[in-house]
Length: 307
Image (cartoon, rainbow, N blue to C red; front, top):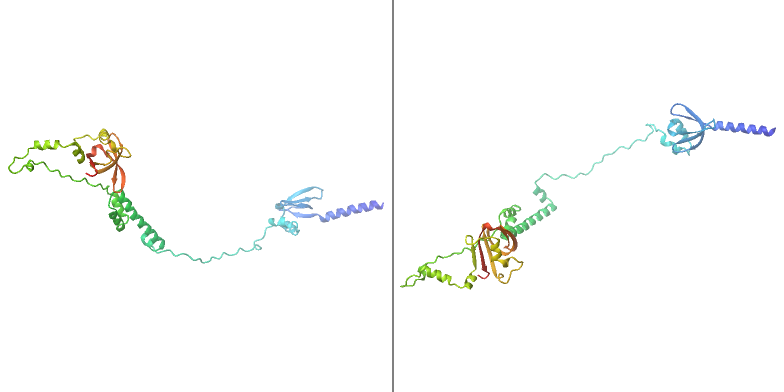
């Protein structure tokens, strides 16, 4: 009998404890929920309700008063704090941004480009390099245009940039052909005192009686009108000038081509076509390939170098 009494008393006491431990949570919709906290997580609480059921309660559904009450529990406080709204009056004030004065670089005074370059060491170095490049350009243009180097470089030094442009715009300098003065045969120069003058027929006969070696020593001259300048003419008359090296027969000969563009001393014939010929000529200290049309050729000379 006593055992039954104590069992009933224990059950009643436990029910009373549960009723005392049960918490009431106010919700955001104005209602409330009573239950025991079983566990807590990042998303919310799991509650044991009085009707012996379980439910999950999200943090976002709890009112601010309920969240603040739960924050008193040290275990739940880290989970609840992100959802508690801090009033504007309790929020820490943002520090005011202090604008400090900075040291600013002074802009240089407005001036011309040359004046700006001359006002600094780097600009002076740039001007010096440009001036040296200008003189070197004069040297290259003098070689390319076959002009006196001292003249072109001196003008480039006096007139930078403009001087090299002037010589670059000028045509290539070609040495003029030597003027050959041919005296007309005068029969009287062969006449002695008291003797009749020698007739022209005798002079022609005397000139025709020259040996081939004398004619070869004087060189050969081919003029337009007497010869037709074409591909076959060059291949038959000057075969030794087509190779990279001349043959023994033409090694000591000089080939001079006179055209409307000037006179060219030919080192070798590089290419030949149906209407023009490509010649490698010596212009100053350099060699250059020039194209000469057959129609522009006026005269061709083949002379020994010692003639």
